Image (cartoon, rainbow, N blue to C red):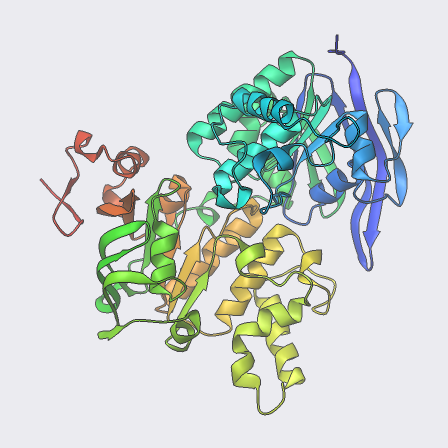
Length: 516
């Protein structure tokens, strides 16, 4: 029977340097059997570095890990896995060309005389997925699954290793509310079995709900550890950022756009996963798109931006009909789009930060050759403006934390001086400090007359930022509501297709909310 009491892990004076950056500086951490110990901090605080050191991905410079009473140093991930440590990484590590079974047991497939028992592997895969109520064809190719399904398979894979310690790095970043509730139920059952969990999340409310203790890192250093039942959001945030964060810095940034100037009109747009969508956007307005995963929001805005095709309908920009055949045409017309998946759709991870920032502006710098001085000035200007924390603009963008990578994407598009900015989940995987900075940036751009379209799955974010909210359900607009008349209950009712339960909000034939 697994041990259920006592200390399973102790980390003492752990340090790690990458070039000129001190990622961790003598930090400490401890964990008990059957405990959920949250590790929080801003992007760049050292959380991921700590996890990767414990999991054998990096080697530490100094300090020691004591696991189950023995000092250990894992030189590769397989050693940590064999010892009973499983990691659910924030960035999915699946092989899209392989099926679910192969991804589930990658590196753990064993057979007699080189022959695998696929039926047995399939049975174990179904069994692992059943624990988290995931119903997916085990022989389906991972590339055909949604991001949410892939995230759930990552969780099932970790559970299937019979680990003694599970590290969850933003495990529900792509999950729906229902899936998150199921994840929390699984965590409670793991605790009851004595399994220890390190839980990393930027969602403070969630951390307070699920954890027993909370440890905070800041700028690579240990700040402190507090029992969750003695903490509140403001206490944790203050420890993370080293100052009091005004709650308005995280919310109430709404300003009223100039309704006399219509930047964009979309009429009856129909394409893959969206049908007969109509809306407009005014100068200086933040228009949010809300809805459940699969509602068609991203596909719709990608079509407007020229990244995807649409079958019928009309897009009118500044009073003139347009149909962009490529994002390049949209960019030249004054549009910019920050997509949801920054690593796959935006960043070139092995290229320098400088190159990633200047990429969209290179056509204006090319005069038979690239003006490298102008390129560097541009990158350094926006690095300073957005407070991107780095050692040098010549470092690869992969060296940055998630929040600073997101700021790099924003810097690229701000350099084009857009009149219309589309932001798809811009605060995904971003800490509270960086989130506040992104909100303030949106606020300032709107004040300058930039029209902003925000796609967000976080209802508090939508309600705090938007002038108006477009709600979609299964590819259709079910309501367009002014912020003053919106609540989380109303948005969810429209997003799930049961809006008629809320008589206070009626929807006219244009999809706009009207009074009774």
